[in-house]
Length: 553
Figure (cartoon, rainbow, N blue to C red):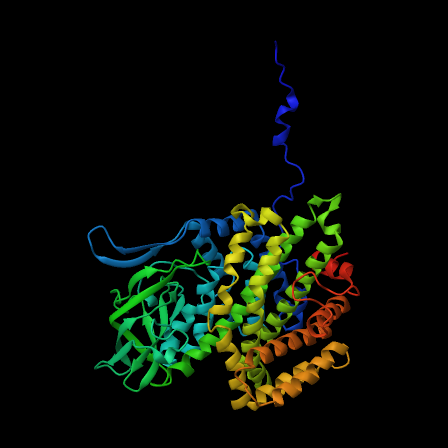
């Protein structure tokens, strides 16, 4: 008998009903981002942001992000002859990402830009470039944040600030002043204390030269060990102090910076996080001896801004990935985007994403104005950074999980890219103070700096009358803040309510009525559920989705 093989036998190999990749796309095609950029005083940067959006969403930059995480950094403690080198090797894609980020001003360049809104522009660019991958944002954030702390020691700032604000990425260990651009890191936490940095045991011993010490100890978490300079906390004779530690000394010899191991982390795999050991490590005092926490908090507060920013970026990235999938895949007789329940999920995610974006840019604007001498904005920034850091970063993991779920099983495989973003999501709520640390910091600000509460209340009431649920929430908050019983026990609840009300106020003033009403009804008015996809029936899903994905129409 002759068997005839039909040409349709291989029909199972035909690919149908798959969404296809999002890239190439415009990562800056985000109406909430662009409106915030203009509103907060950096409209002059819009063309640059749009240009960068096309690069970030392009195939090459997206591949850099994938490769930098697939080919992880490798620690080389010794060379072939047995000499200690303590170097970390990165895949070329990491260096491509870093070079582009520094050139675009995402490190310290904003401090050298006197234009109004320079720090807002830097934030917006970072939110666009962050669509590539998150790990290399860590050295960008620390370099940016190191500048105000370094200014506590003007003689050191005069040497290093011009290099920290450079747009030149020059990897490799060389004497700092021989390089065209520098990157900075931070070393605070130790095995003994974690967030309780006053429990640090690293010792700073005085030398014969004023202001110069030697450090002796072991840090538990120091990211980006191939940076050129580090701000480090250590116990000096006068108390816990802040020090500048270069990897290479001015004469070109290596400073003692023994990298014991790299951390095997949940996410953020492209970025090397290390445990360095100090042994007669030369360090220069920054600020007043014994006031190290106060000094380094200038750095910590700005890295908190980048935590909020990074989470808002992750939200937008995973939202548009989910949107691309559901608009190009069918199920049960129609496209997923046309299924009522999927529309509710996607709209709910869009509302959350825009709230995070609006708050991020408001914080960036406050930072810019505070740096330029606005006392009211300084007070607002003091408390709102801690509020935003607490809440927005808390929302990141659940958001990423819901966006991944929009893909179904397709989102659970590495090739989709979604697992990488999902693993990244918890980091921002841990870095620079976990939830409890930030919640208690808000209480501390309200108690010790009452002007922070006053400016925050003014911000909340600026939208009075725009939404009934927001008005009621602000009234409740007035009572909550006046209640002095069990403040630490209630800290998370109060800060959560402050954050949601602050986001609601921003959306009520600046977003579309559809987004603002849906946010306030679901988050403040009890009209939504605890999971995403539970917006009330009255929510204008069509308007919300148009704004999130197709604002031109």
